[in-house]
Image (cartoon, rainbow, N blue to C red):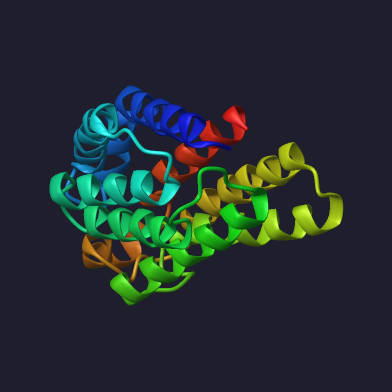
Length: 206
C-alpha cells in the first residue's frame, strides 16, 4: 500500500464508522456509557478533515495525525487507546511511502503493545484486544504459510470476528463495562466490534 491508498482506506473506515455509529452505541448501552459509536464517528470525522489537509508521502505522518485526531476528539477510553495504537503504528512506519505486509504486521503489533501498555490490559478482559490479538496472530501465521496478501487479511478478519463472539462469553474486567460484572456476559464488546469493522474495510481494500 502507498500513502494514497492508506488515506483512502482511512476515509472509508471513517464512512463505515459513521454508518455503524448507532449500532456501536447500542452495543455500548448495556455495559458502557452509550457513546462508543457517537464518539468514534466524531473522531473519524476529524481524521477525515485532517487527512484532507495532509500532503505527505510519509505513512508515519498520516497515522500519527490519525492517532492525534482520535485522542483529541474521542471520549472515554477509546480515544486514548485507539489514538495510541495509530501513533505507535506511525512511529513504526515513519518515513515509509510504501508499506509491505510484513511492515504492516510489525506496525500493527507495535500498536497492540501500545494499547496493552496504555490500558494496562491483556486478552480475556473483554476489550478490543480480544479481537486485535487473534487477528494479528492469524495474519502472521497465514502470511508465513502462504505469502498471499488476500488470504492474510481474510484470516485476520475471521479471527477478529471470532474474537468479538468470544467477548460475549466473558466478564468485563476493564473500563466502564467492569462495573456491571457478570451482567456483561452475553454482550459483545463495542471496541472489539469497531476494530473488526476497521479491519474488514482494510481487507476489502487490499
